[in-house]
Picture 1 (cartoon, rainbow, N blue to C red):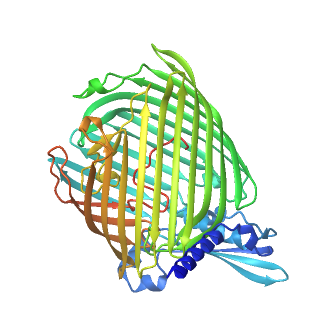
Picture 2: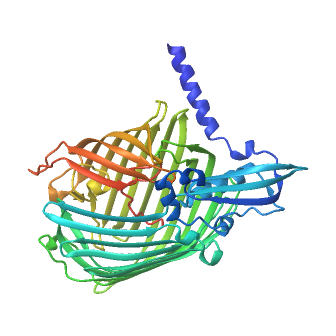
Length: 550
């Protein structure tokens, strides 16, 4: 038995070592690219649509992606010397656009050291029209959403949203062009209004498009006129009027081999904030600074060592191929912040940020990821701003048609100059069975355990999955008398709906949750929720705390 355990551990170490081996060591000889052929296909094949009204209607309401959209994503040109790793990366990049239900890039040897490339894509259904009507806690909620994620086959996205709840509303339009004027520049604008005022977000970015791309730069603007809400048991107990304009400019360069890239850049952030008078029962507990202007400038860097990429299904999606990047990434940021507050003077603070991302396969059917990010601003009298986020995810896929998975996250935030940040936990960000924003505090921990089962049932291209889950949360919230030692728990089950034709990599999630705990006399009943997307994914979480790296 002891020898068997040792052999098992040795095998695990060998597997981990292989996962960490450089890509370059296995790279075959490059070949010369002779030609590129692009083939784009509709959501469903013509022969399938001819005999099925549902498939025919999906094709009729969708315009096939135009060839020039696919061609713009391809940086490999006839005459280039290419490798199999570059071909695999192009295929991954096409899937990452979220335009397609399937994408394949296939080399076709042509002799004499030459090869042709066939780029074959199948679209996903991109039109979405939905309406929702709910009554929760005596409050009526109504929502309308219309979106087209591949406008006229150009890859552009248009979204219209209107949500109303008693005397509150939110209406906005968002337009995204991932290939501005046929280039690699990405443009997005989101503008709208709430009952508190207008808001506008604008982004223009030229990202790194592939692992040998040397440059990235961009600009992001945000203008908002709103009330910052502070919650207690899901109810807003304080509102702080805020008018803020912010602008971020950045530029970065990258070099090094494909499997070990180094990125260095500069980042400039300008922010101007004006505050009103806090109102509500807890208004006295809210810190209201004077109107503030700040300038933040400094370098940032990232080092990425990639061991390999795996293509899997049944991890976060059901039948859609996911690309898992295994390796390690280290991030750092150093800046100087000049902050000027009306009535309080100005000060200069150093700002430090650090982050790490690790993905590995310690056993043959097991994937593990860890991500940690944090930022702190220091003043002469100590910390002025601090926040951080830690996340550990694990997936076990050795059982037939099942994925056992878990997520453990920990978030914290604090502030001594600007308004104190508040973190919330509830149905909207991973603690199923409890109302949205039910628990609030300065830090929280969340545990999610799920058994995701692919039933094999398929109806009109929609695959059906089952899930059993348990959630637990720990919140430090002095206003609610909670401490990190008190667990808030729930159990439940649900359905998952996936279709690479209709949803791409998205998953419909229907959950029924039974809350197990009462908090300060509050009793909670069974809840039913439906949304798009998993509570957690390979590196993502329902709660994405902004730690200042974007």
